Length: 261
Image (cartoon, rainbow, N blue to C red; front, side, top):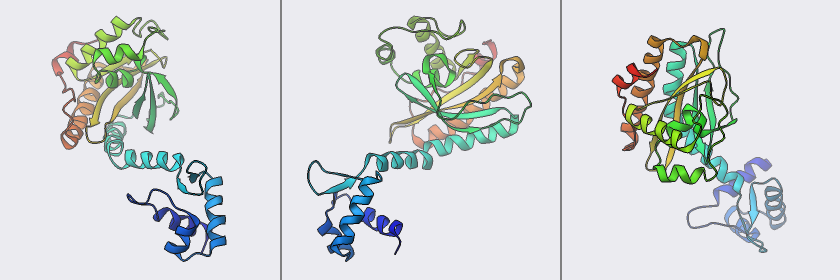
């Protein structure tokens, strides 16, 4: 039996009623020699798969495993559905698409579909952008009450460009527009030279929220294509919202989309 198989057997010992294990537990549950069990638990601890419970000789799953579990939950549910929507739109129109999540006052891209146009937008997955100065961030911030938004920015805003909100009141005004229109846009803000269109959707069961986004080089924005992107993102997100029971989803106001710059 390989050490990887043995480590997997150890992880299978944990359950909703068994939150930690000892060497003796492995001997009993797996029929493992005591010396082997001791070495295996120490090795898994040293590699970050397990951690000790205080100063005891009991071992429990580590923070690393919890983080991996969170990633799996995302990939298997809301992000997976949203990524599929963005992938179809990106492939059809040829512009880059992203799925992003908010972490505090920042947004982070977690999946991407690179566009095929010669002039295209490329942003590294994992990069942190200021939520207030990006379409993905504002789409997600709009799902919060204004007081919660104020709490995120106790020292006000430091705008990265002239087209980004310059102060908190300007940000709140844009969030109100997003709630009314059903979509968010940014133009030459946190990522210079980029026009982005985003919608947000959530899963009330898990509390997860994501932004679906298509980015276009600012010099290539055309009204007909813009409206098509807004409609496609909104339609896809609405289908996801119906599946998850997202009552905080903002439906598209097409009239607003047609009159907005």
